[in-house]
Amino acid sequence: MDIRIKATDYQMTPEVSSYLDERIARLGKFLGDEAAVARCEVELGRNAGRPRHGANIWFAEINIMQPGSSRIYARNNAESVNAAIDDVKEEIEKQLRREKKLHNRVIRKTGSAIKNWMRFGRSE
Image 1 (spheres, rainbow, N blue to C red):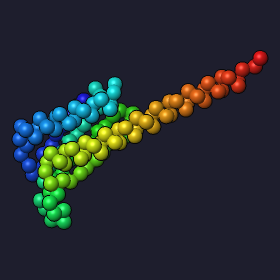
Image 2 (image 1 turned 180 degrees about the vertical axis):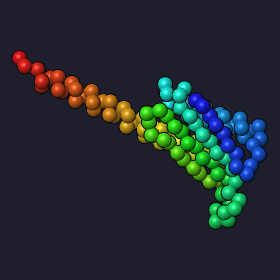
Image 3 (image 1 turned 60 degrees about the horizontal axis):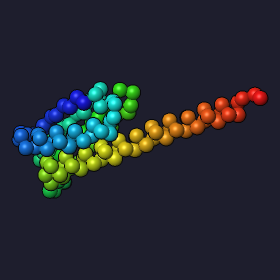
Image 4 (image 1 turned 90 degrees about the horizontal axis):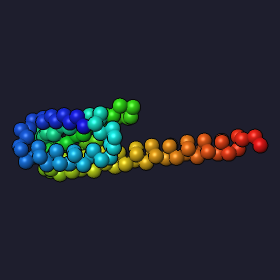
């Protein structure tokens, strides 16, 4: 998976970088065979200019693009960088699971329809 990381108004430390790499690596299992061609764009930073958020001044944003599939995007604000990374990773996992279930359902329904068509389409 091609991972691109961008830090906005924030200097990434090695600890946060390794923590982020560990979390992003777990998303690869949901992508399956297409993980090699998928691109993951991650943005971390501070929302310092927006006082409405109160304590939630850190944000994390993940954008996953796969060929032949829809774009998956999530953004979350939290009190710390690690909490923002965890929250956005959970949201991306939820979206990937939902898409995988939909894909499997379409394949099963299509297979069932073809089987019924073959069963009733025969002339004996």
